[in-house]
Image (cartoon, rainbow, N blue to C red; front, side, top):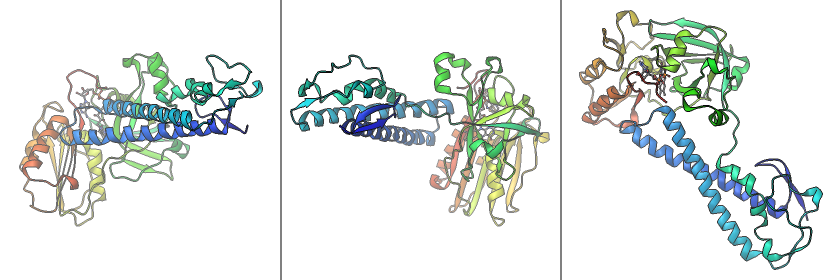
Length: 397
Ligand SMILES: Cc1cc2nc3c(=O)[nH]c(=O)nc-3n(C[C@H](O)[C@H](O)[C@H](O)COP(=O)(O)OP(=O)(O)OC[C@H]3O[C@@H](n4cnc5c(N)ncnc54)[C@H](O)[C@@H]3O)c2cc1C
């Protein structure tokens, strides 16, 4: 019997070619199922986001991970069924000699077969039954920890509410920019009292930490990446407690770790539109600033930027044809002001060639969405999404 090494789901075992094929088929089914589960869930989520997202970032991630696992498990179950049927019908009656003890699988086996030759009737289940424990791992596929750990080198105060954190690492600890204008990452922050060392293996930590103790991760726009200097920058709104990441950003000092996910992006922004309406509160200003810097010099439009007050303005480069209008909450807390939605409503827009990008608190984005519906805006050329949700005195998961 020809032997193959196989270690996909656990310790390496020596198996027959037929068993190897069985396991390969199962592995492929699992991978395809996970992909299908993930993309179906993602598609539905995008639709729900377009109509005003109901889930926060953490919940979205958990849902996608669950869909991925469910897809993998369903595909595995289906593949096992098909393989079981195929093996039952296509094996010729005969005998099965189990491998010699030196080649016995290193994985736990419920009841080791005797060394005697057994009748065919027992053999067709063998590849599936014997590797059941490692295959069942597929319901929670092992992954490498996908985080990059950098060191904060500088902290620049942009205003009372915003800081720019610049961090670096040799080769950016493997972080690769995706080049997208809306490139963003998850920033992970753990409770220092727990003494966790990054990168955080969240799957493992979940087994021993309570939900409240788990490192939190929130989305942040990558402001710029300098691969030559091995540096990147993120602009954080510092909004005090109880916000985890925002609070961390207000206290962080050079030497601290900045833990980020690989680069992500959602939409490609149209830079060639006839007229641009850009709108954001502080959380969306980094993303809008990147667009303003990338727009061609002849671009036309308006950028509405909501900040706390006049002192909170800072330098934002923009083409001459884009009017920059700062809006002040003047004492109204962030997330409670209607200054941005009101200004948005009063903008005069052309019938054609309009592009809208808006990122702000959820209720403001809902209003902006309604105004865009009234304008009959073509949403394909626009990017309107909620960046955070006001929750009184509560942390968001
Ligand atoms: C794609 C994307 C990119 C983003 N980019 C940036 C970015 O570059 N910079 C940035 O600062 N934010 C950005 N955000 C928003 C950021 O992810 C949220 O503000 C996040 O909730 C902050 O997490 P936290 O742990 O500080 O607070 P949470 O634990 O999430 O919230 C705690 C409380 O703080 C309050 N809060 C949360 N966010 C804000 C805020 N921005 N202003 C005032 N109060 C707030 C809420 O009332 C909340 O109940 C982005 C979001 C997305 C989806």
